[in-house]
Amino acid sequence: MDTPETREYIAGKGRVRNFTTNLAHKTIDMRGFLSISLLLLAGSIIAQEPDSLIARIAFGSCGHEDQPQPILDTVLKHHPDLFIFLGDNIYGDTKDMQVLRDKYAQLGAKPEFQRLKAGTRLLATWDDHDYGWNDAGRHYPFKAESKQIFLDFWEEPAGSDRFNHPGIYHSYMFEGLGRRLQLILLDNRTFRDNLRSYKGELKGDGRFFYTLDYYPHETPDSTLLGEEQWKWLEQELCKPADLRIIGSGTQFGISYNGYEAWANFPHERQRMLNLIRQTGANGVLFLTGDVHYGEISKLESPGLYPIYDITASGITSTWSFATPNTNRIEGPVMDNHFGLLTIDWSDPDPTISMEIYDIRNNQRVEYQVRLSELRSGKSGGN
Ligand SMILES: [Fe+2]
Image 1 (tube, rainbow, N blue to C red):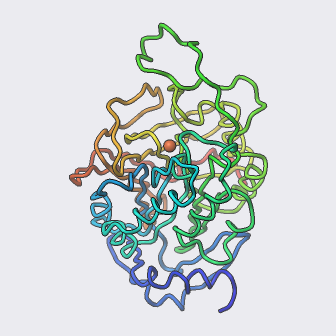
Image 2: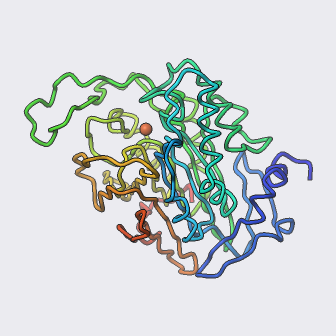
């Protein structure tokens, strides 16, 4: 009982008491948690009853600490097993670490945040504003201090691998029903090289009626994830899993739109696709945030199954227009919203439902795929 992995559950006992798993409309109380087997696998925790598996994952991003966040109560109506904060969880935008701490405290003091925390398990990664500065990358001077504040606020369990490396990338493995669900949270900030400024390259293109900030790098001498995180990710993708959810603060699957996105590092995005292909990692899909509206993108790549990117980015933020995105297959949802991923593990070929609910609890997007559609037919990794 004294191993690092068990301490997570001792430290998080208050949350675990209320941590329920919905499976085929059946709610399983997790109070008998001591009977659950725990296993540490290279930093990823497998912690499930053998006859259940996490099936409802809610997610969102872009919540301003100054504003009420009623969408968090809407989330609870859907009884998720997890809620993933995908970044811009506060608008820090400061180089004063006390200000950053105070803004997190402001979020933490919100009754709706506390209700969400009491009602489900919270996991998080960051994007630029909670990292510390708009569109910041590796040159942000307070990244180590900001990381500590992040780990404190999100109550990172003692013994977590997040304490052992720069940045906050991390993974989780959930096992049950003879299946494995892997959750990988990327760090798009700590190692990211500078973006390339837009200098009018697309002037006259009527799709881009707004001010573009960035233009894609055209040489492969810059990085988004950094070499250490890439090496770690390769090891993660080689672990056996049925479904792999990758959380990324910025959008992965969209076409170039002049704002921050993986599309500004085309060689890094291609590296991700190549890595998925080379490791034979089946079942990958992305959850992303950042843009202040919701949508689903579908990224096609030769020799690889379609990569879906479900963006939920509107806990409090909204945007007045949605940028061009040739990969968009659902949305945009311009109202405050959250995303919900539901996996029907009872089916031999599980259905994965991707939904977006707005602030009035209206379902605005639903798109379904079968797990078998997220396979390239290549063996290995799974
Ligand atoms: Fe952002």
